Image 1 (cartoon, rainbow, N blue to C red):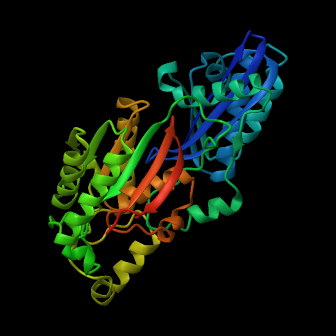
Image 2: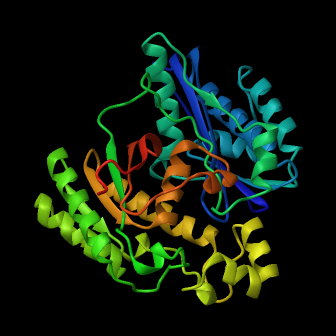
Image 3: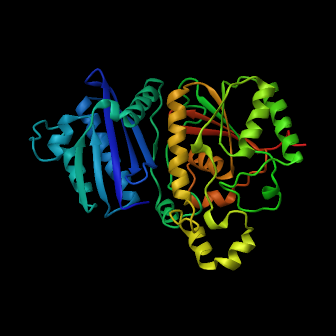
Amino acid sequence: MTGKLVVEADGGSRGNPGLAGYGAVVKDAGTGEVLAEVSDSLGTATNNVAEYSGLVAGLRAAAELAPGADLEVRMDSKLVVEQMSGRWQIKHPDLRPLAASARELTGRFRRVNYTWVPRARNTHADRLANLAMDAAQRGGRGRSRRPSRSAVSEERDPGPAGGDSRRAAPGWTQTAGPPTTTLLLRHGETEMSAARRFAGRTDVALTETGLRQAKAAGQRLAARGGIDLIVASPRQRTRATAEVVAAATGVPMQVEDAWQETDFGDWEGLTYDDVRQGWPEELAAWLGDTGTAPPGGESFAATTRRVLAALDRLLAARPRATVLVVSHVTPMKVLLRHALLAPPPALRRMHLDVSALCEISWYGEAGVVHSLNDTAHVP
């Protein structure tokens, strides 16, 4: 986590005053990674009260994550931004206690800047506020999830994946319409995967076993049906796997660079023992810091930014679709960890076999994992 955070906050009222709710999201300013989400309903309140409530909740969540950090607050409420910036007076008595709470919280940061943004750039917080109001209409409450102190300490001791994503994901009680589903398929066996060698950008072909695994995956996915698109990493091993599946399913396929494996630089083609003997200090640094890259390679933090940007594009372009992504270990683990709200060290606790399948449903930016490392089809 970098030294600067962004809070995006919003609130709304269906009636003004009426059924009200708020939402806020905390992001890493450097990576854009979602660190926390908070939302809740307020009963009957005005739009302005709901907007201020979202601000207070977002500031509190950011203060729990990184007291002393620099903070940018982005809201589409001109009133709140101008009042908290000290340019407008706060005349309404219902808003003064909320503004006072917000000011007390801003004292926990090194500096705070308020920025007005158009509503189109505040959709994440707006969606959370509406989910809270929807839940209240159904007789429940919105959800609020803040990182614990232990979660923050884990973030400062990162494992091999960049950023964190602690969000209130929907369970079966909070799904909102049909999701976008990503089926994740790791490529079949290669000589380098069989020998457990670092293989990032190295363009290696499938073995005969790998080709049989791809055909088995294709048969299983054809029987499953319902796939709208196949997206593949450009590496030979993933492209060949995807082509076999496309032939079996009749689903169109496209290639996208963002889904390729991490570039392991000077370690490409080597085993873990080779690297431990030749680069002991560099390996220790790489294992302990997601921002550290192998010599001449790419860090896991950079991979995470690349993969999550690709996910955002996919979700925007293919709402409610089912997309098969044929990729590699690290990009698949990035998505799984992102969906599970897991801390960075969780990446080391996942194992993905060659030709393994995983499934994630995405409700907006929140994911629900249905399967992980499913190899029932592997011969």
